[in-house]
Amino acid sequence: MRRICVFLGSNGGRRTAYMDAATALGTLLAREGIGLVYGGASVGLMGALANATLEAGGEVTGIIPQRLVEKEIAHRGLSDLRVVGSMHERKALMAELSDGFVALPGGIGTLEELFEVWTWAQLGSHGKPCALLNTDGYYDPMLSFLDHTVEEGFMRRAHRDMLLVAQYPEQLLARMRDYRAPNVIKWIERGER
Image (cartoon, rainbow, N blue to C red; front, side, top):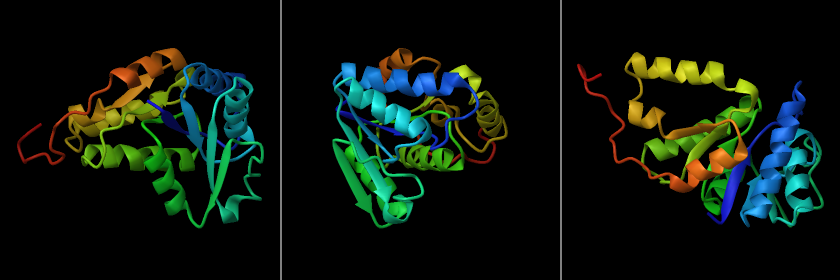
């Protein structure tokens, strides 16, 4: 993997563990020679991740829509900052530049970005790993709900299992490196559960 896209909050969250996880992941990416692609902000978890990657000698590409340059306070010290016209352009370019995707704690923007690339993987549009860094169990309630979608027949277990989960960055990176996309059709037939 040459570059990993990370989705995460432009806020810092309430627990210091979230900031610590962003810093640890950024440092690990730099140490492993993996470039970071992210949303381009200098604040919250986004800023901590970018700064840690840069401080450890890593390459950071930020992609931010023009209308968010001031709101999210674009990070001006990146290896490469790209200002695009829309959120759609942002996500498309992030996906194009990346060999895998990770979500750290964040809000609806983080979730929307993760779910979009995971949906693309489910539909076979790409075979790149999609993963959660589940710091302090942040994503546990969502993971339970995703299991519920399988139980209720709205998602195949193989597609649910495409979402890799780990508590620590080293574990997550190892799982991403070992990932092989399943060859399973999306649609569930009536009576098939």
